[in-house]
Length: 421
Ligand code: UD1
Image (tube, rainbow, N blue to C red; front, side, top):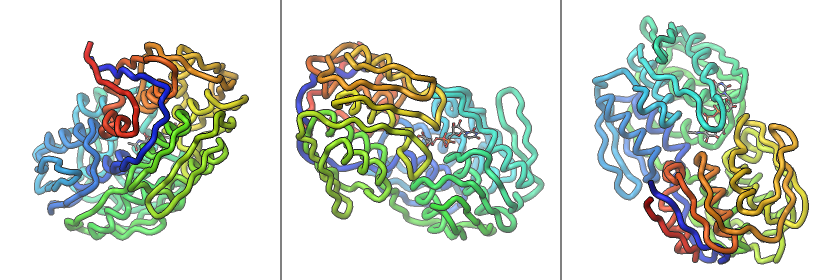
């Protein structure tokens, strides 16, 4: 199994380019099923979750060219299977997003339930409730969701009981081929939803209100092929921002999407960093000897994303004072705390959703274990900032969501080596 060996203590300095967004690419790949025509995508990051989605698409009989310099062409001329199997859906929840696009195009589909995951139970009840309201018959048998319609899905009013990114995406895709108009109330507003809507519009869909909490989709009989460039990854951007702060570095991030990260750059400035934004470039300088603590509560967009909670916690671990971090999106997303404590952080849980962090002047390198994707990147940041060497185990989590992380860190002066046990 691969491990990362990191010798910490060097400030990150230099410039790197931000990759295409994982969380925008996955739903866009699933949405390419909506048309029989070829779709050409660019700025797709080369990472494990994208490869898993491409494996799933190929297993359904969809043709894809190899991913080359972020570009690939997909053609779902005719699906040879309408089943998304457990083996793929259980490794990556976003596979569940093929439900909406296959159901809308073929009127039936079977998708494995994703099951639990390290950061909480993560149900899909909102997805299923919405498809039932659109006229699908939903049966749960042997761990699979079997969805069937007599003909097309019907456009209708859908009220989401919780703000769900995946639920909004699944219904948004399906509604483009439904009969009539669908209105999604209490929709998620994440930039990745706006990117998906832009892609669907590029395929000929009629969508209004994406980026607000009410999205209106007027269904059409068919969609056509198109060329589309995926947005850049705001979570990768925020991760390197946190790494720059924690190591007191000076980094230029190119090809970023600063308007999707305003809550995070605002927090960065409160920590005491100088952050300037020009077009798609973000300059971060955190040369002050101690940062200020910043209390954070994660929320749906446009708040601080839950996917950056762990990385920003490391910055607070090294700040001069006390802060709290409250996680409101997932119920079990503090597993990195025990590992950070092993590196010398002073953190205790006030209650299951709030951590109290007493800043320390230094972390020390040690052996730690990654538990999920974003927790892994927080341990990398901790290790880069720590004195001495750290070894991070189970980094397959990291490979799911960060493109060429070791190369990017090395180009910023990070001393990072991948080894095998
Ligand atoms: C997506 C992101 C993930 C991010 C999360 C929240 C992708 C591939 N993943 O995950 O990185 O952390 O948004 O920004 O884009 N919920 C229900 N019922 C449902 C669906 C969700 O109760 O049917 C709950 C979840 O348990 C969770 C909350 O809603 O507590 C938000 O989940 P959701 O927005 O759906 O997350 P994902 O789409 O899975």
